[in-house]
Image 1 (cartoon, rainbow, N blue to C red):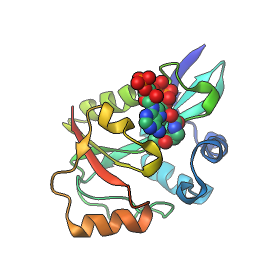
Image 2 (tube, rainbow, N blue to C red):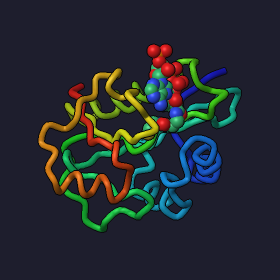
Image 3 (cartoon, rainbow, N blue to C red):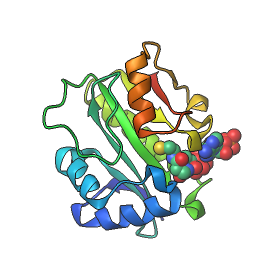
Image 4 (cartoon, rainbow, N blue to C red):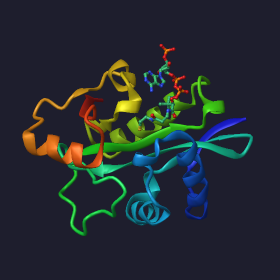
Amino acid sequence: MNTIRALRENELPYLIEVQKKTFTSDLCESLAVFKNRFDRFGQFFRVATIDDQIVGYIICFPYKLGEIPKNNAPFEANLKRPDCFYIHDVTLIPEARGQGLAQLLIESAFNQAKDLGFTKVSLVSVGQSGNYWDKLGFIEYPQTTQEILQKLHSSYDEKSRLMVKDI
Ligand SMILES: CC(C)(COP(=O)(O)OP(=O)(O)OC[C@H]1O[C@@H](n2cnc3c(N)ncnc32)[C@H](O)[C@@H]1OP(=O)(O)O)[C@@H](O)C(=O)NCCC(=O)NCCS
């Protein structure tokens, strides 16, 4: 059976396993960083399971539109007042793709965003995501500045884009 459910703290090592299978090594984050993100915002994280096995996850949290969390680094102690929901990662192991689970993970994030009263979802589209996010209606953040581009390129590849979608 396929399900989407909340992540439990003791399951973080499974996420590391999924990450290794799905993201290029330059994008991978350490267990310590996952733990830091979980301690701050774990209530929003969701996993996809097939027959009780974790096959993917979505890491998302309230954040400030126009800001980009540094990849593989803990959060700053004081984050700006959030005004959007930010999708940091969504991923599925190859065997779990093409079954609608990604859509369910993303819908779960949109529903959380709406429940929190946000009207925008943002994320960084990296080179390996191709035009995936464009097809889901995300557009490049219209107020992208040189400073934002510098932050993007210090954490991600040169094709990375800060994107936003009204929900
Ligand atoms: C992104 C991901 C979660 C999508 O899962 P999925 O099960 O393939 O999603 P879907 O079956 O809903 O596919 C939706 C569409 O997106 C397309 N797609 C998937 N990955 C894509 C990519 N990297 N680039 C462009 N299009 C992509 C699929 O081909 C499909 O197209 P179609 O509807 O025209 O047939 C999965 O491909 C994945 O885990 N990729 C590796 C991690 C990653 O890059 N995550 C995104 C960045 S955070």
